Amino acid sequence: MFNGGSSVIHEVPRTAMRIPLRRLCERSLQTPPTPSEGVQLWVAQLDCLQPVLDTLANLLTRDEADRATRLRIPRVRAQFVMTRGWLRLLLSRCVDISPHQVPIVYEPGGKPILCRSVNREGWHFNVSHTDGLAVFALARRARVGVDVERVRPMANAVGLVERFFASEERETFRALPDALRLQAFFCAWTRKEAFLKALGEGVQSFERCAVTMHPSEPPCVLNFDGDRQVAQRWALGCWEPAPGFRAAVAVESFGPPTYLVVVE
Ligand SMILES: CC(C)(COP(=O)(O)OP(=O)(O)OC[C@H]1O[C@@H](n2cnc3c(N)ncnc32)[C@H](O)[C@@H]1OP(=O)(O)O)[C@@H](O)C(=O)NCCC(=O)NCCS
Image 1 (tube, rainbow, N blue to C red):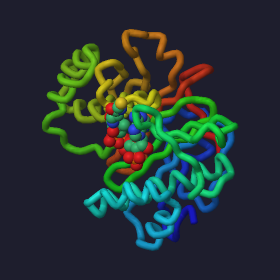
Image 2 (cartoon, helix red, strand yellow):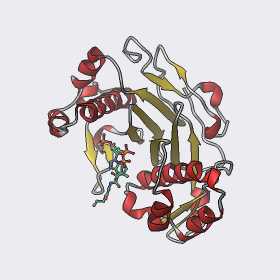
Image 3 (cartoon, rainbow, N blue to C red):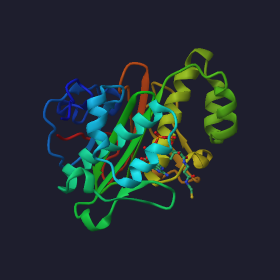
Image 4 (tube, rainbow, N blue to C red):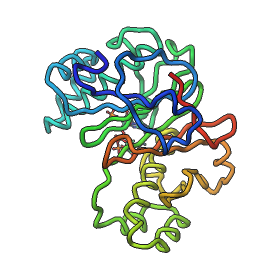
């Protein structure tokens, strides 16, 4: 079921433990491991066969199915259905409840979370999907956020940075050579969004946080609302979940923040 007849979902491998996340890669997975400690990252390809879509659609609640119906563009609708279906499968293994019945509730800012009544182990999760790919992050007792973007030409990257990024990021970006700007833009965008999603915030808070943005710099939150201690409390990682895509994950860190650990 997890590979749906073709490889549609992957997990970052166990051998990746204690390797900086930006150096991770994926392998296909036949049998899903049981979640335990650490941060799990899953990647799902969303352009796949109708039977897989139908199977995943059957896992959605009535509210989710209604939401899917309101999405008019078929590909967008299919992506929502598949992402939510995979999410329910992953969460069902965390809380040992059938996928359809996993109670997902929403924070005031719209972040989906597990209902506390079934979440004795303190699971946190976050999801991002774009253009045929979904990324899932699961962590125990630590807030987590994830973002994935297709790296694509951005004619207005400079304008977006000037309008939405923090002042120190704007300065860094202006000083970059043209050849690095597109990569730096997507590094920063995914890092910021992953961090803000971990907090349950949205893109309206982009200016409140600053991250490292040079592609060769270790991913790091530099400040949030002027607080520079935030780097000690949050681990940030980025990687390429598929060719042409960039993803970042932010995890609340209660130990040394340099590395994230992925455990099967
Ligand atoms: C949340 C947000 C950053 C997502 O960005 P995006 O690039 O469009 O979408 P992504 O694919 O990365 O993430 C979408 C997923 O994140 C999750 N999500 C939704 N809202 C979220 C939030 N506030 N925080 C964290 N995760 C959120 C959902 O699982 C969603 O998947 P779904 O649409 O299939 O349910 C963006 O939609 C946003 O800024 N929303 C505004 C939130 C806001 O203003 N809240 C305050 C209102 S009081």
